[in-house]
Image 1 (cartoon, rainbow, N blue to C red):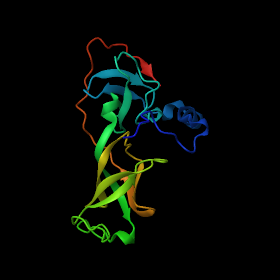
Image 2 (image 1 turned 180 degrees about the vertical axis):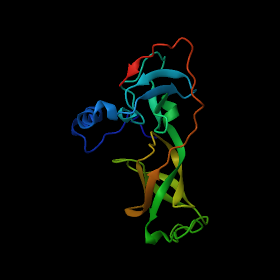
Image 3 (image 1 turned 30 degrees about the vertical axis):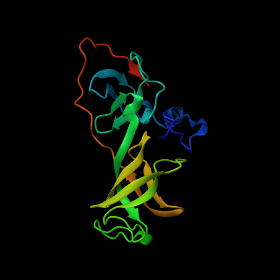
Length: 202
């Protein structure tokens, strides 16, 4: 299991300070303000821009919790930031879309599976990298309709981030890849009574 929980480095940002990078390239009116909720749907605080948060982030979040909080989900449709415990970052399965398959796999339609896999038709074993510098982890990959695939990790990983690329390998050979999809699994948000003057975060 991945042991580095906090948000991962961004390779092209000087000093890895992505917040300062964004503030220097975007005007204040270009940030999408919204609200922070916990995984149970409880209102926590307001925030100054969803762009200033990353999955797995721990620093800069509001206090008031007995345990450390982490960003576990970002909802760009509502600008909501969802926070939870470290265990809420653990992911065992996710989908990818806009998948491109290497011809060596033999995947030409959702029912096909790689000839070299030699396992159940429609799925195969491979290594999957879920972020830059990720060492890769064993997974069962199932091609789906509409250029999608389902990734079932043999060992759960932390901070699997929607919008990042997942690349599928057989040794050093790239079998394919796609973009990690967001999974909506949180309850409807609700404001806590007495929260008239919420703190502003980020």
